[in-house]
Length: 195
Image (cartoon, rainbow, N blue to C red; front, side):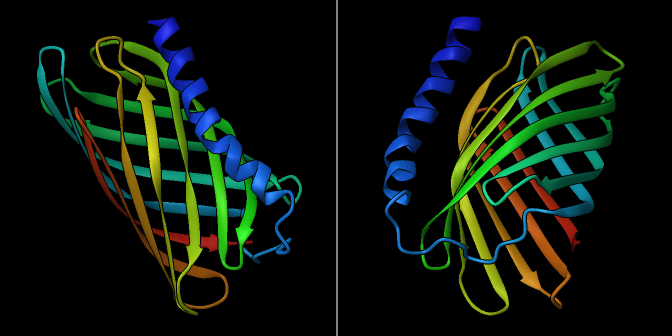
């Protein structure tokens, strides 16, 4: 199991390496994306593994703080209520790296350590994402890429994620998140406040 985690982590980093290297010579040095924010929202989870499919409704708060122009610290807390005894809390802490690829397009790589405390069991794991963030119009931002999640002992998954953000004003955005993997489906709606 650990070998598979390490292999997938190295695979994601190796896929991102050419983009990071290309960004070193990119003429764009700042796309004015904010990496200091708080999100509050709702998310539907569907996991299909182990004893069968589990669904849960989750309320969450998550945030990011930009340490410098390329590095951010992240954290989040979710409270979820699901099928049977699939109820609990999820706490995550991690870091993110971002760099401009070209005008209005950033490469973003994040990694989080996750502790999931539910009525069935306590689990620890990782969530990794690598993708791009694009300022599509003056009021719309789109993001997408690959994710890897390994939290529950009998499940890990690699899949695609997407996000859209609509700018209400310079500090407030409304957004939607989607993750689609072989055994994981999540759909979330949230508000984001920039500091």
